[in-house]
Figure 1 (cartoon, rainbow, N blue to C red):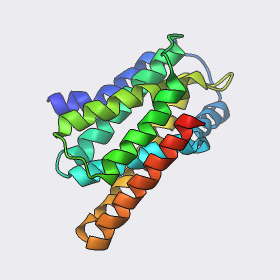
Figure 2: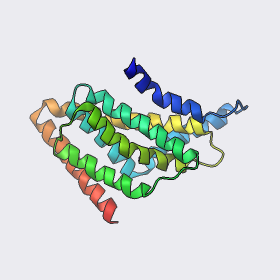
Figure 3: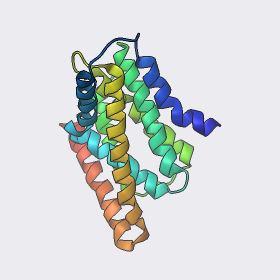
Length: 194
């Protein structure tokens, strides 16, 4: 029961974003969805961090494979809601760069944690990623549709990371995944000092 409520919490946040019923054209809704779907791919920091979340979840295995990404998506939706509500978070871009560095290090070192701890750690970063996306909502966009788009795109990037993480069953795959983590960490460091 708790798992169901936890998994549905992004939906609850999205529903909070929906305002009074308004007539919107299908074309406008489709455009907003596409904007949300494509937005996460516009920044290398987001792409790398999201794939790293999937890789790290796959390294953890078991419940972490779904709990870490689900926690991330939930917190990301909350961060988007904060931005859309006009609430600010301090140092959003530096925290996002730090997330790339630390998630990369977690993958490179194959850091082991309990699944809820991993979900909490990634969720802290997700709040900032979601805030950045929410703050960049295009003018005249429907917030709920945009948020659905960036959550779906993020879930797809997590899935790519998990799929790459499935190579862990092979010795060369373990090395490849850890090298990807190292590359992510170096990128995060470069983003921090830039």
